[in-house]
Length: 210
Image (cartoon, rainbow, N blue to C red; front, side, top):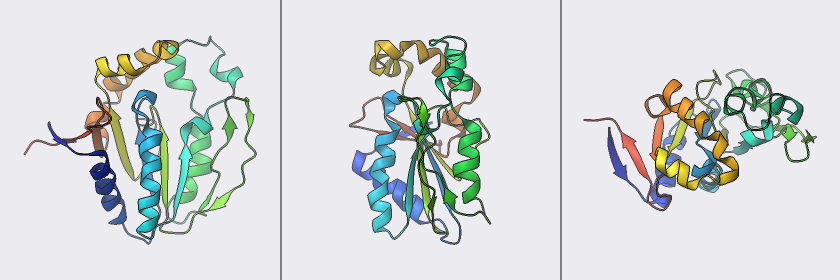
């Protein structure tokens, strides 16, 4: 693999160009995947304005708003990396409320959030209609390898050392889950676009060898 350094601004521009080149006759479901230390939500947020300038409707959704209730997440303890990996995300809720409605022939009716994990209760969000040709920007961690039907996947990659340094002590117990993710899902090989984020001010695109 080769790496091509890019500025944060150029990264946003290139990702937007790729999304804008997709047909307007269908929705585009984009996952921005990465550990919290890589801040995938920041990149997803940065893509919204430029895509709207390009004339595309955008809906922003965060996987953190589709976590399962605390009674299920903590059923086997609060600090189990395998439970974190397997059971924290409400995959069915994301599938049903966000991704399936944006399949060809879908309704376009999306629920932008389902569960407030801080208050541990339903968000009571209102459904919104995404016009055909609109773009879903979904950020989150450990999103790949779950059978979720994305049309474009962007993975923000951190080396093991950078991930450990930039993960707070209170979240260090999650690190084995990301090691497992690299080994089992192999996002560097399976994501459509991989961005090295060891230095967030100097990202680099991972490129296939010539």
